[in-house]
Image 1: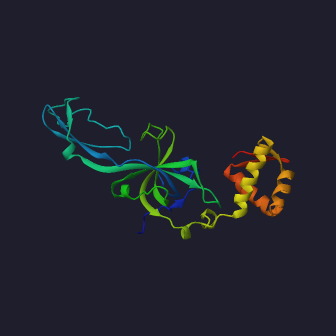
Image 2: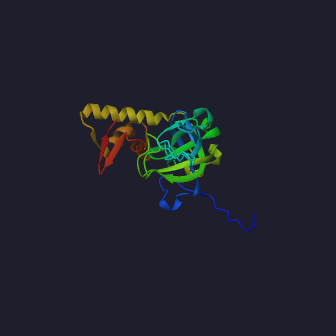
Image 3: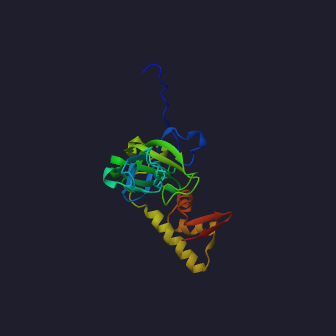
Length: 250
């Protein structure tokens, strides 16, 4: 519509949300790594003054603490601290939180330490599926004024979701796609066994790289493939290369 300013929706990687994004709508992609239980949440609370029976409507904030009337809205009453919450007349919706982790480039693994809490309300609470890769649109808030749930810390950025979509492998950027499932590489299995045997025979986690190359070549594994397998094992945390040495952690 002419005369209206349309806010451009931007995609922000998890871990790169900043103060400039506060109160703005953004989209994030990640894998669901934690899902909270569905709970009731009061959006609009109705209180009744116990002195004059006047009903008072109090909209609730994003905080989990219930906002209560300070004084009766009936000018002829003006009482305070005498209000009853009318559950049946209040506006109550479903609520839950989830945590999504950043998808690491190239390998499809997830960094659970680099994650974002997402608050979900209403019909969206049934959408999250554990381990699903999702694209979530929502408004960025912060917990600077206190905790919004038991899992967030003061100062965390939080996304209040307005839309959740499941992302397929084809929709992911090439660098974020998970590798296709392949049959186990027999040489990878063989190399792991070799490293464990060498570690046990030497009674040491530290092996010489040259010894590893020599032993693996005796089992028909080329030096090039050994290097490729070591990159994979090192990324998994099974080994660590330091100069001319190889430390076997597994």
